[in-house]
Length: 370
Image 1 (cartoon, rainbow, N blue to C red):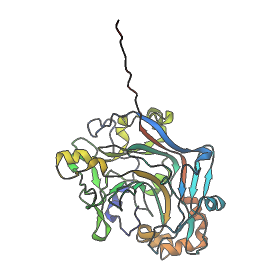
Image 2 (spheres, helix red, strand yellow):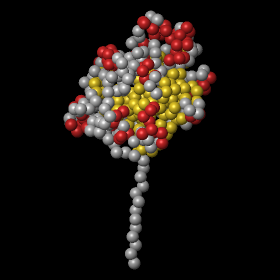
Image 3 (cartoon, rainbow, N blue to C red):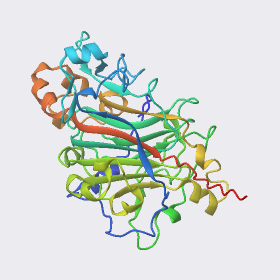
Image 4 (cartoon, rainbow, N blue to C red):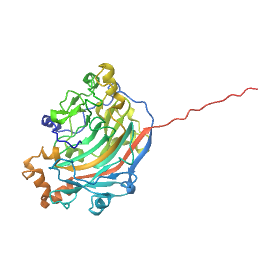
């Protein structure tokens, strides 16, 4: 979710019709690479301590920096609590859009990030939710970003991102001057396996330059869900990032018992039926030398971000007048839409957790003979 203008392709919208579950099969053991890692809990935001200072940094600026159509004003921690934008309960946390800010053209909103608190190199991250934001002018995102170098050379991965009624899909962004990478569709779309279209229409190239129409790579299993369908499908969104690949999963609530997540002992190698996207960086390089020459470093040390943007370079540009206003900014500045925004534009999150490979200690036996 970069701060420069871009447009997601419109032709993808057909794939959201009647979407319920991604078109995965029950057993896809030969479709994806597996890490064979044993994971242990490294960090979590959960319960009444969800928003503790040690977990998140609250950013404090206008949303979508540099784009005049943004209608979000991100709040400090103190202001977010004072304005009712965040709530921490024993079982869940709420992150929502509020009323007008001091600037009447903007609404109060929240952007959380672990930068300055926690960052990682390779992990399994998971968010359990019962509601995600959706609706007119609403642009929510849950994403990974590195600032080891300039954007997008250090890498950005969008786990959840959507706006208006455009279907949600993951996408990865890098630069030709940093770590160029083009995925091999033959590795992604094996015979008999769920097929993944590049929904950015970029030929599976992850190079991103919005000025020249390059949007990054986005191989996702269809059919895609609309934002409203995601909001009404409680479960877990997870991403596994290893030295060789990125892989995302959606696990419905009723399937969580067999995943190990509820015991903080996740087993993603057994989650093939829940895969929603797959980015085989190393296998692409091995099959087509030079296509992704530095697969282990396509993302630098990274942190998590959870935010709700309004209008901006994407939701504002993809505005639909059927929402009842000539522009996204007009819609958001109208206090008559306060109830709509309150009821649609919020995350209800049980927890966000990060797991890393469990460290093992070698057992050494010493035999002493006389």
